[in-house]
Image 1 (cartoon, helix red, strand yellow):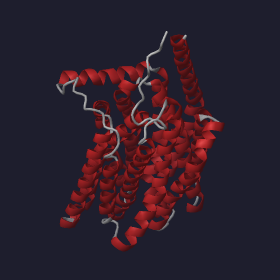
Image 2 (cartoon, rainbow, N blue to C red; image 1 turned 90 degrees about the vertical axis):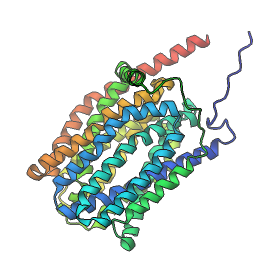
Image 3 (spheres, rainbow, N blue to C red; image 1 turned 120 degrees about the vertical axis):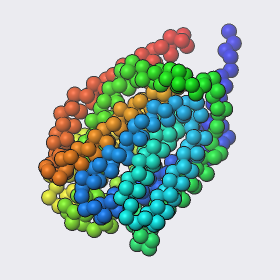
Image 4 (spheres, rainbow, N blue to C red; image 1 turned 30 degrees about the vertical axis):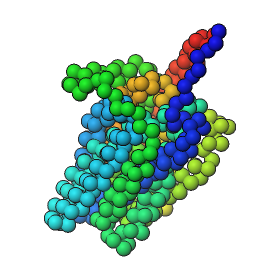
Length: 428
């Protein structure tokens, strides 16, 4: 019996004429947006800490920044499912640029309001993070076949590492000539250019099947939560990610204070530290495709998790910047390696038509740990110290991961095997 022809997906790697160009524009837009984020992350904590000299303020600012993002994630996933990704990314990138311009103008007009304005601006930018991340998640399956998803997700992860090199390096250079406040305008320009790079990417017709009445939106959000709970490997992965982000978040929140106050290093050392993480992205970018073919995504994830556990403990016990800095760098490299596994496996088991709806609550669960980490630093950082808190959290991660990581990986293997068997039966 003659089989019906299978239509090719527009934008699939190697299939469409514009695929290489689309992939390059996709990666460029992601990189520019992440570079802008890194510039903001360099400038804002230093501006706040230099103005207040209190690590607790950094913790509370970090918590405040993440609350809007958590609320936005389920709705952003819904928007990405309806929109397709590219259109949403460009609009939100322009919005981020506008927010930074307003923040700079307010800080110049009212210097005494600098800290509250920066905190409010951070909260507004945080609100924009969710639709940007959901747009990227939504575009990956449009640009890659199933067998190439790991490669594209590795590309996204490496763009994050490259941004950590380019962002702080750009920030250090620009701060020397412009000052830290003006860095926010540099970031605004990068956000604007990132929006332009995504304009030619595939844009499916806007889905008008569902309305925007509260009942319709609630029904779609319920589907996302229900699927996240029912797909066991995704739920286990979300719980594991929550724990990792809580522990890593404690060090990220207090990083500026540890470097410039506890270890008495200059601002440039803070930037160099973040840039050093990103330089490893260059090596990652070259080695990861071959490593994925030879080793597979699961061993890479396990290696990344092990590096995180070991280096969090070393950073928490570090007596000086020279010990802390390499540990911090390797910790984030381990986080990047683990994220290749994290991002690749979850896409394979979530139904494509519901990807955004599931990823919204999934991100909410993952990132709920960040404001909690900020509150922990804000409440306990001044009394027990950020390093001691990181030591306790690192021990928790080691114990928890020893049980949950093998359990999560086994659950994914089982789910993917069941999917392969189902596909074989259909073909037969």
